[in-house]
Length: 389
Image (cartoon, rainbow, N blue to C red; front, side, top):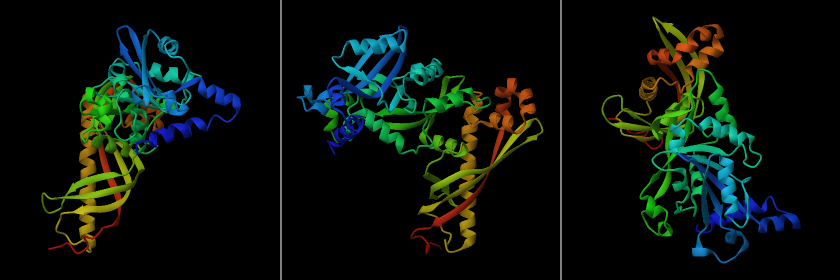
């Protein structure tokens, strides 16, 4: 496994170099797969995780490091990148960027939109690079982590996020759409470091049985470009379920007859229908979900051969989803934000009504309600068919 990241680098770079001129360019270039942007009083701190040229050329490596992280400060991102370029002997190629990591401080300062605009207008950075933020650490710090599996953190972050599914992650173009949409507040996935930072920045992290490593933390909720609240990964998956961007995950529910739990593995889930109505002075949003999955662990006493038992389990799953969505809605209401896009739904359904609600929607969202109706297909009950007292 220790050379997997090397194979990845070679394949990624070799795919774009075929001619003799290209080979010459390869020998004169340093490639970056991850770019970090932090914000301090002096301006931007830009970090580039450059693949050590010796990994490609076969040259002897300094300290056998698979990558080099260059950092520079500037009033603008371009100024910082120029400083980095002046401090390396090779041309810095940004066209292979896969991850843009925005530091927590930058996100809290409300500078997400300008970063997105910069990426979209940059001829050097691909617009389809994934954009994420951090919690608890600077972007530059996470780029300096030695990954115990992948070798360097850029590939670890990429693979960690790709597990979520392509419909969950966002690039600059998609984030800009979210930022421009009226009646919907944006959200971004965030990463966190598990373990000691200093140990993670040492090559010893590759050899320990308890390494520092980067994990998906969940989604950060934004209001007018400002990061306001972090959701943990479990709540984030339920948020994405109503946003139509869910990937498979476990829904843990309480048994119909007692405190024991059972696990439902969701494979496919999408919003079949969504409606709203006014109940007194509040807006009620009704979601109809189509879900399919398997029973994975069953600690209940009902016989799974009995259709009535299956129906009871489906009701319990729906209750769990309802409880989770209510929790997320309550968190959002506390910050007067709308990560579900409830206001945007009203705007699409009834533009005239939205014109009267738009200015006060941040107040109206505080009394909104969500109601869940799930059509659930249990495809497989595993080896628990005979379980029943």
